[in-house]
Image 1: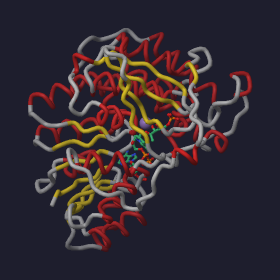
Image 2 (image 1 turned 180 degrees about the vertical axis):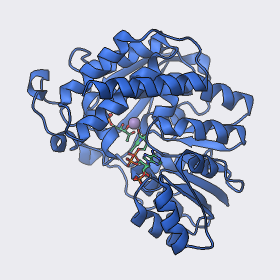
Image 3 (image 1 turned 30 degrees about the vertical axis):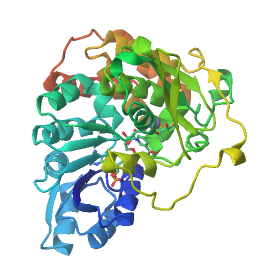
Length: 380
Ligand SMILES: NC(=O)C1=CN([C@@H]2O[C@H](COP(=O)(O)OP(=O)(O)OC[C@H]3O[C@@H](n4cnc5c(N)ncnc54)[C@H](OP(=O)(O)O)[C@@H]3O)[C@@H](O)[C@H]2O)C=CC1
Ligand SMILES: CC(=O)[C@@H](O)[C@H](O)COP(=O)(O)O
Ligand SMILES: [Mn+2]
């Protein structure tokens, strides 16, 4: 029986992780969760899964839940998330919280010796060096949940890193993949949230539309697989059937395929190195799909991808600025305060004005993160 602590239990990845636990009660037990402000979902999770520790974002929500569930141990705020992350009985932490708020709990969980199943890509983007260093120091596995990284991880099983020629990440192109840049001026939040293949949380769906999602994934891949940026490429693949590939020196390419269903990579991280039947058993039929399409990436059309490569290669605090500016700008777009193309402009501005600090520690990263968000907000 694997005991799981789940951060971001009420979100898209959180809900799908609960599906896996529900489908394999004999293998998994939920012992701790964290959530934001969705109390109705938290109540349902408490009743169905009976976790021993629950954390919510706000003190007032914590107090409400405490009166409803008097025997339950409940925390709140950043310290509550950390408590959930290091919950004593948990073997594995599934980090499905949104944003760089996931960084500190991840580091604490690594120090506590928990295996980490990481969906929360912002944590690896903003401080990949700290996370990977801590994982090596504490001998803790970091298992990818993001579909592209799970695909690469699966393709690499039994392979040697020295034989890798390059990683090839696939990108769907997002909600506006068939529109030219000049057609993006007046696009609405509703249109941007309409991803062609995946049903996901709002922030990552906007990131897919700007192609920042792929940029964050390039940086994520750099840290997870310890490869230079020159060995990480992106190809447009509108069907999201091939989730990513690895090319080896001998020219062989190994790909992982599947329907766009995050429960597959979530479950693989939970069962690794074993596998289990899928909870619904829905299978991919290549004969029904018929054709798969691939197109070269256009860095002028998708400027955020170029920003991410540049920030990743520059290193130091540049990826922190990229991530924080993006989080702040996307939140502003979702609130209707800026236009879609202003997301790129705001990020570009923050990157240009930043002076890199090399090898930043946690405190520096948190400071730069906060400063960048404030700077973006001051321009809106
Ligand atoms: N969705 C997907 O298919 C994929 C997602 N990812 C990554 O996984 C992560 C989660 O994405 P997704 O599930 O889509 O996001 P959602 O927005 O659907 O869910 C986010 C979760 O985090 C919680 N949360 C948000 N802010 C805070 C905060 N300040 N304090 C505490 N909890 C908070 C939310 O709580 P509440 O709702 O209760 O307010 C919710 O449980 C992201 O990093 C994303 O990039 C990676 C690959 C695929
Ligand atoms: C499901 C998942 O892993 C997302 O990150 C997905 O990859 C988004 O798709 P695109 O960024 O390719 O549009
Ligand atoms: Mn992905």
